[in-house]
Structure formats: structure tokens, C-alpha cells
Length: 238
Ligand code: SAH
Image 1: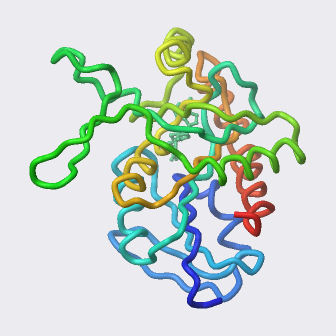
Image 2: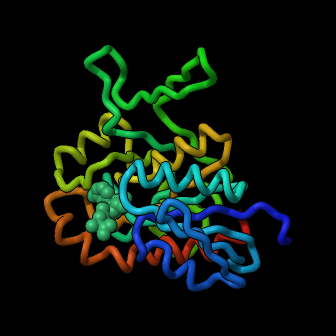
């Protein structure tokens, strides 16, 4: 079992990963670039867990380090998000992620198009970063069985806490998003560039509207733990 590649688990905030870290058996940790990687087993499954901090750069750095140091067979991003047409407390498993703030439209590109290096002379243009379908389905089914309110859809990522109903509507119209957050699309890009499967699981902490400054602090703990708990329950099936 020690030789088996771990599942990587990343959350931005302490409340998103703490309950998982506290459940690890045989926990060992190492610090790289100020990020602490906790490895051990979760329900008998080898895992490595890290808190990356909020935003796309933090998340990308953490993901790349995790991939190079631990060779995970799958990386799962767990946490909270603003809902886009989805209720507080519901869960969203990403079918794909987009970076809603990557914008070179002034040069004729489509909003959200990313330019990924594929060697010295090739660039791949990609808008929807794929997530592992099998893992997403396992998480979705588990969420439906335990909590009821669960959805599969596009998760929109950007370096912005969205608390505006117009922007929320725009995210739905532009990308068909069901949730908006600040890390998933960055983790998915780092995974895609390295050929590592990834999944993004988010519990809705707020409605990404005028109420978010009040709803987020009120619901963040409960919803972050909901996502983490679901992941712990599903880990043996992943
Ligand atoms: N000061 C906070 C910053 C949290 S930013 C801290 O202590 O870390 C909000 C976090 O929750 C991000 O990690 C993001 O992924 C998620 N999130 C929840 N609701 C969101 C919303 N409406 N818009 C964007 N991100 C949201």
C-alpha cells in the first residue's frame, strides 16, 4: 500500500482541509514554499493534503509542487463556492472549469481562452479545462445519496470574490457556470498541463450576490466541512 500513488487533496482555507488532516493516519508533513503537505492514509487510502491559500497563483503553485513531489494519481479540490443558480448548502462537482477572468478579447480571442505551452513551438488554446468524469460522478452520486442537493456543471474560477448579482448572471450566461470560486480552474489547468486527472468539489457557501458578505462568513464553516466530509466518505471509491 505504501507504494501506491496518493490522492492529492487541496483546499484554499484552513476550514476546508482541517477535518481531513485531523483524520489522517500515520500523518507526516513537510513544508515547501511555505505550503505544508500532510501525507498519510484516509480511510486506508494514501493521500496528501495541502492548504494552498486563496486565489489562482497560490493554487497553481501548490498543485505543481504536489505533482512533482508526490506523483498523485488524482487531485481533488475541496471547498466552498458562490452559487450560480444553485442554493446555499448544495454541492457542485465540476464537469469542467473555466477561468472567467482570463480576458484577451481585445485581441480577438474568446473570453476565458487559455494559452498552454506544448513544447517550444506549439500552443494549445483551451477554454474548458476538463475534469475527471469518473471521479466527478462518484462525488456527485455520493452527494446525492447523502445530502440530496447536488449538481454537476461548470465551475468558474477567477481572482475575485464575486458578490454581485449582475456578475453572477453573466457567469451563467457566458460559461453555463453553476458555481464561482477562486482556485478550481487553476488547479485544473496545472493538472491538465501535467496529465494528472483532477476533480473539483464545492459546497455552496453563498449566492455570489449582495448577500455574500453576510452569507459567506455565516455558512463557510458548515459548508466547507460538508464538502470535506463528503470527500472522506467517497475516498475509497476514488
Ligand atoms: N479572507 C479570506 C479570503 C476568502 S476568499 C480567507 O481567510 O482566506 C473566498 C474563498 O471562498 C475562496 O477560496 C473561494 O474559492 C471561495 N468562495 C466562496 N464564495 C465565493 C464567491 N462568491 N466568489 C468567489 N469565491 C468564493
